[in-house]
Length: 236
Image: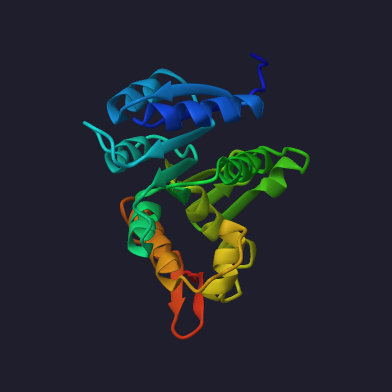
């Protein structure tokens, strides 16, 4: 396997779907590891380093929700969830839990591959070192983002963020004096057209605040009622 070949973990208890994903992604040039239960998926995750995880929700033993929660305790690896649970609330709950994307079942394998490419492209962009290293560091008081390594810290402590959470903070810190609408935030963080899912933005903002709150009582995001959100100004 080439050293730069991307590695994908597929966690799906339906053997035919698991094999379809593996064959398709392998033909697409990716290295795939298969797991057929949440527990097996967690063991594989702990044993190796992956660039992307594709997982189902309804599995025997450890569910996809439980696996996502376990992974997010230690890793920011992109997670694409596939599930027959396709309601808006289910999608929002998964995004709040830390999933990066959601694809309802049944799905077209071409669409899954396209979504995989989007997530891997974000990884490539995050690792682009063509800019001067100093330009890749964003700082707001004790909050620091490294655009090259995709890492975030508060008071020197690591802040584990999903890709969208990171992009939201990045947007605020790139333009610290601007108030952003939910549409602007969504289109920057998801790189998709906004379809009016206000609750999605609210959930992600709440998640960022909660994660920062575990480290410091300082506020880093202000709500501007009727308009949107912005980077919080330091207290006088």
